[in-house]
Image 1 (cartoon, rainbow, N blue to C red):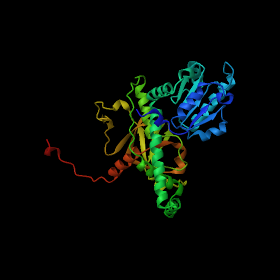
Image 2 (image 1 turned 60 degrees about the vertical axis):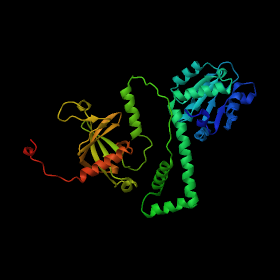
Image 3 (image 1 turned 45 degrees about the vertical axis):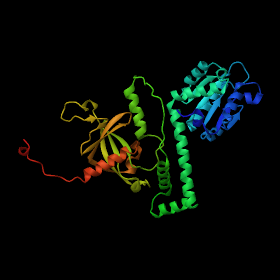
Image 4 (image 1 turned 180 degrees about the vertical axis):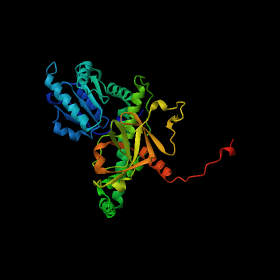
Length: 382
C-alpha cells in the first residue's frame, strides 16, 4: 500500500487545548511528526466556530482532542459541542478525523455511537499510545488498511487534483479568455451556458484523469445481509437520488401509483433537447415495471435469463438492477410515453447514470430501427 504520508499530503488541522496552556503534552510530538514530513499544520486550542467549518472542506485531515478543558472529566456540554462540530464537519466534507485524547477510547466511541456519528472516517486512539512518530504512523497505516474508503478517497483526491490543475493550465495557456469563448459558443447555439460549461469541464477532467491503482489488501466480508448490502452499494453506484437539478435530465426516473399499481417512467430524451426545463418541455419516457424475481432462471416460458453477471434482454425490453431500494425494473421499448415535465416533475425519484442510461438509449435505438424479416418455415428446419 502507498506510504501513509503520501496519502495525507495537504494541510492538516489539530484542535487541542494544550496549545493554549503550553503544557507538556504528546500533541506537540504528534504535530512535530507531521511537520518533519513537510505537512503544514493549522492549530486551534478550542473548537472553531461552526460558521468556520465550511472552510474545512479542503483540509486533508483533522486531529481532535476529546477533552478541551483542564478538568479531569469531560463536561457534558463540551462533549455535545464536539459532537456538533463533528456533525458539521461531516456535512461539508468526507475526510479522516482522528480523535487523540487522554480519555479511554471505549468511552469516546460509546458517546459517538450514541450520537450516531461513529462512522468509518473516525479513528480513536489514546495519546499515551502515540509517543513516537513510528507508533503514530503505524496505527494510522493499520487503520487505513481496515478502512478502504479513506484509502480510495486519498488516492482519488491526488489523481483528480492533478487532472484539475492540468485542465485549467491547458486552457489558460491556449487563451486566457477561454471561459468567455466557450460561453459565447454555447449561448450562440441556444443552450444553457452554465450547464454546458460544467459538462465540458467534467468531461475534460475525466479524460485527463490518469489510471489510478488501488493496492488494497483483500478483506473478508461478513455474509450477514450480504445480498441486501451488495444491492445497496450497486444502487448508489448507478442511481442518483440526491442533489438533483431543478431541470429534467437524460436518465430521470419517475414513479407513479395508479389504483395501487406502481409503474416507472425512464426519460431517454437527450439533455440537449430538454436542458432548459421549461414547463412545456416534453420528455420521451419508457414505461417500466418491477420484475418478479421468482422468474429469474426458472423453468417457465417467460423466465428471465441471468447469465455471467448480466440479464439477457430481449429486443423489446431492458432490465435495470438495482434502483428504488434494490428493485429490478424492466423497461419496455414498445411502451413509449410522451410526458410534459410540469406534469411529472414531482414524481421524479432519481436519475440513472451512465453507462447504464447510455446502454438503454443504444438498445432502444436498435429496437426503433430494426428491420423486420420474413419468418423461416418450420419444414425448412425440421
